[in-house]
Image (cartoon, rainbow, N blue to C red; front, side):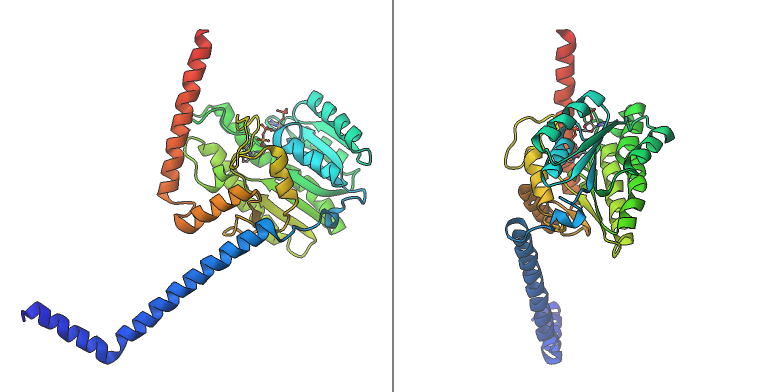
Length: 342
Ligand SMILES: NC(=O)c1ccc[n+]([C@@H]2O[C@H](COP(=O)([O-])OP(=O)(O)OC[C@H]3O[C@@H](n4cnc5c(N)ncnc54)[C@H](OP(=O)(O)O)[C@@H]3O)[C@@H](O)[C@H]2O)c1
C-alpha cells in the first residue's frame, strides 16, 4: 500500500470511529427529503390555486353596491377588458386613457351591454400630463365612491433596442407613463380607499420586468420598479382594508405585443383578465414574490418551473431573452426597410 492509500485508509477509519459519516449521510438525507417535500408542496399549492381554490370575491370591494372601478389605459387591449369585465361584475367604471374618441365609444358600449353600470371617462395623455391634468382627475374621482383601481396603462419600446440607442423621448415616455403616472394616480385615489377602509389596487406588471430583459431595458426596469413599489405599498397597507396586488404576465395578444393570434402560452386580453379577476388574493405562479400574482395558467406554470430550476435572475434566462430580442429587432428593422422602399 502506498503512502496516499494509507492516509485515506486512516482517514476513513477515523471517520467510521467518530460516526461522522453516518451523521453526514443522515444530514444529506434530511436535506434531500426537505427539498423534495418543499417542491411537492409548492407544486401542489400551484395546482390547487390554478384549478381548485377560488379567488376573493369582488363584492369585498363594492361590486353591485354602487362602487366605481378606475381603469387606466382603458381604451384598448388588457385595460379595455378590465373595464368591460369589471362592469359585468357590477362596478361603475371610470375610463382613463389617451384617446377621447375611443373612450367615448367604449363608454357607450359598456352602458348598453351592462345597463346597471354607469361610466365616466377622462382623456389624459400620461406622457405629457402635468399638475393640471392630475388636478382634473382628482376632481372627477372625489365625486365617486371608488372601490377598485387598475393601474394598467403602460408603454414598451416600439421595437427591441440596445440601451445606448434608446430614443430620448421613448425613454422619458416609458418612465412617465409606466411609473410616474401609476404613482400619481394611486396617490390621488388611495386616501379615498383608506377612508372607506376597503379597496383593491391592481398594478400590471410583466415578465419583461420580472426577468431582466435586454433590448427592452427601460421597459424592463420600469416594471421592476413597479414590482417593488407595489409590494412595499402592500405591506404599508396591511390591515387597512386596502389590498394591493401586482399582476405578472407573459405575452397577451394586443397592440403592444403586436401579436394577433392567441395560443396556449399567449392568451387574449379577455382570457387574461378573466383569470386575473377570478384569482384575487392568490399568488398562483408568483410564489417567490409576495403580494404578487401570475394568474394565467400557462404563464404561472412557466414561471414556476423557471423559478424552481434556474431562477429569474440567472444568466441563462437573460442570455436567452437577449437572443430572442436581437432576432425580433433584426426582423423589425428588415420590415421597416422593406416598407420604406415600397
Ligand atoms: N400585451 C402584453 O403582451 C403584455 C404583457 C405583459 C404586461 N403587459 C402590460 O399590460 C398593460 C396593458 O398592455 P396592453 O398590451 O393592453 O397595451 P395596449 O393594447 O397597447 O393598450 C395600452 C392602453 O394604454 C393607453 N395609453 C398608451 N399610452 C398612453 C398615454 N401616453 N396616456 C394615456 N393612455 C395611454 C392606450 O390608449 P390609446 O388607445 O389612446 O392608445 C391603451 O388604452 C401594460 O401595462 C403592459 O405593460 C402587457
